[in-house]
Length: 237
Image (tube, rainbow, N blue to C red; front, side):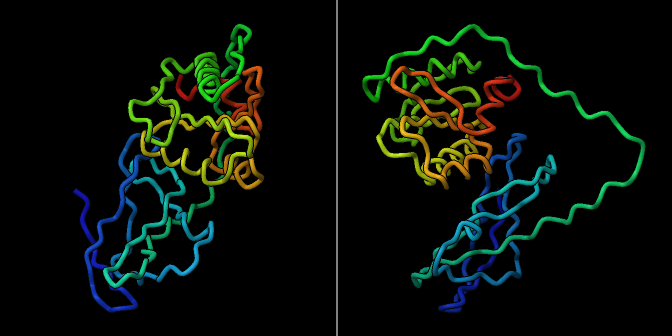
């Protein structure tokens, strides 16, 4: 069970108990954000992208990742940003004999993809599911709960299919990434109208494969993570 920490509101000066959030690391271990016990929380007046993410090292695998900044709503109505312990500085590597770099994963050989013509939003989901199977995901399917925020899920996979006529936005990419974190799965995004510039940039930073589909139902990669997924297939797959 995660231990709670005391948090003192700078507005009303009341001390309250706060339980740090826990997220699944990609290694499979639970990662509880290391909230500073003696840290001074700050009142949130305006959010920026840098403010809502923190860098934390996983205590199990040592991997460094970006996680949602802990927030706490005080009973007086103030929303607080709770500070976390900063990651340890990375020591420079010691000089030593040269070692061979690990071999890259080999490219996957596949037959030609057979697309599904898109006439409706449902066709777009069907086309994406067929493409994901072609990539190597074994069981892409619609979630039992349609309100989960994803359109397809499966072993190691969550996917969002945006059939609208407007480019997919930043929020959609970020939400898909968070769904992937919660399920220890890779998030894959498909859009019929492309992506806004900031959504494309975040997809690159978060390593979310982004694809665009035309009405023939043939997805095309639009960033490096998508190219890598086509080349080598699903992670550990």
